[in-house]
Amino acid sequence: MKIAVLAGGYSPEREVSLSSGAMITNALMEQGHEVCLVDSYLGIPDGIEIRFVSLKDGETFTGHIGKSAPDLEQLKRIGSNRRILGSRVIEACMQAETVFLALHGGAGENGQIQAVLDGYGIPYTGTGYEGCFKAMDKHLAKLLMRDANIPTPDWRLYEKGTNTEPFKIPCVVKPCGCGSSIGVSIVETDDQWIKAVETAFTCEAAILAEAKISGREFSVGILGGTALPVIEIIPKCGFYDYENKYQPGKTEEICPASLSAKEAGYLADLALRVHKTLGLGYYSRVDFMMAEDGSIYCLEANTLPGMTPYSLLPQEAAAAGISYNELCDTIVKHGKGV
Image 1 (cartoon, rainbow, N blue to C red):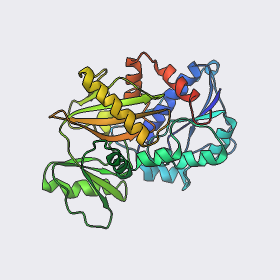
Image 2: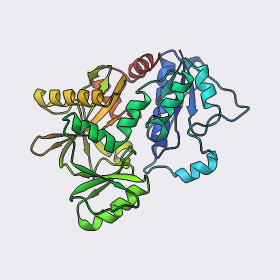
Image 3: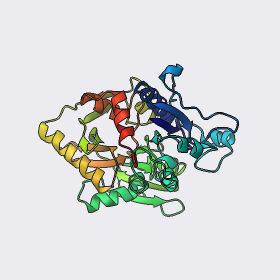
Image 4: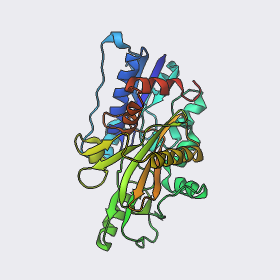
């Protein structure tokens, strides 16, 4: 197949996406596909050929993730672009048989780019725009989970310019629509509240304060209507923040997680319920906390889980006997409209 891989984008998760995109591109070429890797925000300059490369061309792709999120203001100066898609991105997508969305956060995961591709009749991987919108808006997703009797930590929505009276402490303060733990703070004392709120508001105009659940952290991938083995996440220091997610050696990940069959089965069933409640596509990843008393709480769902060397979904797939290349190949072959 001829496949356009969209990565990068205008998002704090840009470097994560570029790393995912590079690995996906290499894997798809190794599976015999012709691939064009495109930065969805910077696009393809006029005069530059739109090239679909294969393994015989001898090219490989790499990505780098820094310890902190990239400077988007600097990116804006480079790109000089206020559109969600850069120059000639749609042209590259229309030359492909399908689009592999390797985007994380921003327009790539909130449904905007999916809606644009739908408008052009271009097939793509992952979830459609409606499911993306529901999952990316943490407040809306939690409302839907609560209505479906899916346990999720208590929370409160705050909007910039309104009353930010402290939520019950300890709590977790986070932007309403960001991923990769960007803008997230753990608030243990009253003195930490104001700084946490200010940090989250630098990312978005709507934020959540969520009751802190102390205990064990887990994630469950969904692939083709089946739950993958549960993975446990154990940061060596602090919480599972941006640095601990993407820098080698910062977090221990155990898959399959050390759980009883009953506990693992319950997490798998709950992940499938979340996936269905939010109307997600062929694959997703759902994150959970297990409190010290054994209670399970769903934190959020990810419609385009990371595909970097340290990402959770590929590790879960490997535990199920699915190689990274096979994972990418099956995702692209089960894309929307393929």
